[in-house]
Length: 257
Ligand SMILES: [Zn+2]
Ligand SMILES: [Zn+2]
Image (cartoon, rainbow, N blue to C red; front, side, top):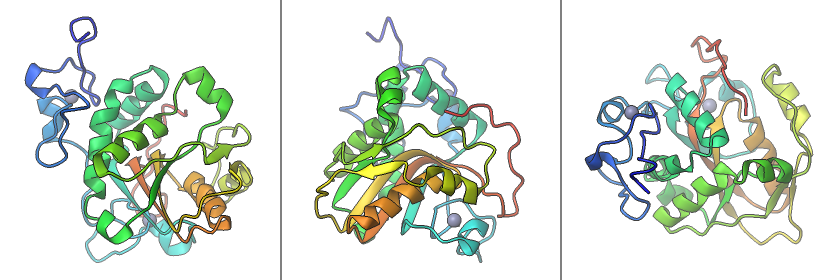
């Protein structure tokens, strides 16, 4: 299979050298990751400290604890962490992963997300991992839910059980690109439903691919709280720049999927 479809770097899509290749079975969390090319490995846009204590977005200065958004707005989740910044390379990569069936990126990305979680898990101690749900029609068209695949792999790496099918998207959400945070929340209200009866969980870890304003994770968290979940944490593959944290907003939002 490797000869027909040689493994490619998730970030730049170049064919990987043999030494950079990996399989789901062989991937290791600590140390240098395999699964991306040597060039990209040295410049991985990992989120480093200081990062927002609430949403995990990178912060500009050490003295800050929260990003501009989290200082002024309330979230329904407790805390979250992101593996990467949402750079152009990631934007293109996530697009390929979602729409071009590039499920081969999953092991590498899940390992990076597990890496970002490493120091948080002893404090958070989630009982279960839940992937962000996708509307059934969308899922049928695509054939898979990338958040679910990431969640399963993170579960395998961390030993935390993964449950799918507890959450459901009730209607297709129109593009949120042009909407502000409040409008996004309004737009999403009631778009996620929990399976009833819902199992008793007090601490849950959500898995999603991209964090922009956090409105999707907020809506899921709100629903989980109505089901008695006390602590809601999340891990995302990448996080976008906030509007109010003093950084300019990237104008070229190339894709919305
Ligand atoms: Zn690369
Ligand atoms: Zn924040």
